[in-house]
Length: 466
Ligand code: NAI
Ligand code: CS2
Image (tube, rainbow, N blue to C red; front, side):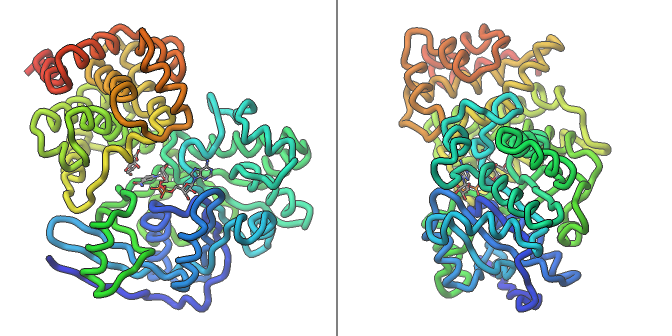
């Protein structure tokens, strides 16, 4: 096993609180912070980060403070691990520890230029691309009978304070796996502001930029094995460390208030339109992940790399990507989709990551629309085959019925639907797109139930032209 250890290569004393990251979990540590780290290494600057969370995770933030914000990112592949110390964090904030005004105060401060978000798909509280006014957390925040609890309400409270103080606009950059995540964030923030203060909403429209971005790096939740790997390389423990793959990609819409942090110097790409990049990644990588999460668990596998060791499942994953997801894409200029798919399969093979299928299966009701339902709709329109996509959705429904419960905002309703007399119709009624033809999903569901997951997969592969 080879280890490389790289200390912080820039002056951290000059950093000021210019970036707020809300939802500071595994991905934040290993992706946007790493781009900033490399950017500061190249060109320097005062772009310091305040890391925040809203609900869980006070202890995780306090642990970062105790280490002066320093932590290691371990990039692991094959036999090598590169351990890089990250120094971009200045401090952390959590409303439960620092008070409800701490985040709005920071958003209002003139130093702050950028808010980064990794609050998961459900954190945006949207439905059909708009703020979901029936969401109980949004309703509670609109009643204002307690401190704001959603990220959207916290951001709007901070922007209101910023405007009152005569501050300039800023940029809000979503790093969550959603199509057009910038437009979605904008719709949620403006939707909330319009409900509370129409002049504030107008100011936000005129002063705040919401670029969309495509983010990619596989960063599993930290495990005991992950910590052991870091300790082995470091010669000591780092409870704040994170393990990830070496690959990283960030494509950001070029739409910032003022000068952006040195993300491009750190390896990110600024483009006028991220949609082709987002769609390719969400459907090819994340669509395959979601299929593996459910099909793989039903076959008794625990991790993504376990699935890649099964020749039938690996072939089925490639078929899903190239025969059913790829034809629905408008590709970025110069993209070679077969090459992209093969690279993804190699990334999925990384045995050092131990990326658990049960983690990817979490919040599936929030992931199915962009990863599988949208490409299915495109295939139906174009009268193309979508049998592997149908199998993936059917595996989810079988899994909801037969596997241990997995966290999802609609968990109880989904399990009840999956345990009824017509699980396919009930689950699709609950979270599926209304117009979806459920026939192929129903056929796949029957095949899995009657013959088992492996046989159902083999059936799909046999049907495929050689
Ligand atoms: P994590 O579980 O380590 O962190 C999730 C963060 O979201 C936590 O800070 C949590 O407090 C916050 N959060 C959860 N629900 C929330 C809500 N309703 N409102 C506000 N904040 C909420 O997960 P991780 O791995 O950091 O992933 C977070 C997101 O990053 C994913 O959902 C995905 O959209 C994006 N992402 C993750 C990748 C990965 O490989 N881990 C890769 C690409 C994108
Ligand atoms: C995964 C993603 O958890 C999931 O749903 O599909 O987080 C995936 O690891 C990343 O998007 C890779 O960039």
